[in-house]
Image (cartoon, rainbow, N blue to C red; front, side):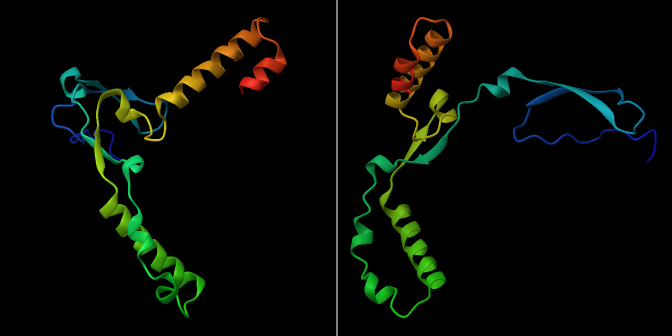
Amino acid sequence: MSSNAMLDLVLTNKKGLVGNVKLKGSLGCCDHEMVEFKILRAARRVHSKLATLDFRRADFGLLCRIPWDKALEARGAQDSWLIFKHHLLQAQERCTPAKRKSGKNARRPAWMNKELLDKLKHKKEAYRGWKQGQVAWGEYRGIV
């Protein structure tokens, strides 16, 4: 490796995301060097336009209309699985509406709804209370 090698390319997924890139010297006695950079604020505040499938509003009635006896007749386990998987993915594509996620909800899995978050909060509070001696062990285990 050449000791005068220089960093000439920084890859990002958004234009203008990284700035002030500097090489900061060697990392111990190896030939790797530290890189210092600044993540620019304006690029981070872009709202996510992530789309996810809304399984609560899905209608998988399409799967009921498939004559499974004929579709899977005289097939092995592997072939049957591939046929079922193909039909399931087609039904998912056709019958499950997509919804846009943005903001805080974009970072949370679709299955984690308000009810589940409330239960987790209650569990954490009970644990904290048990640790401080305010809640009995049996009551805490009941909540868990």
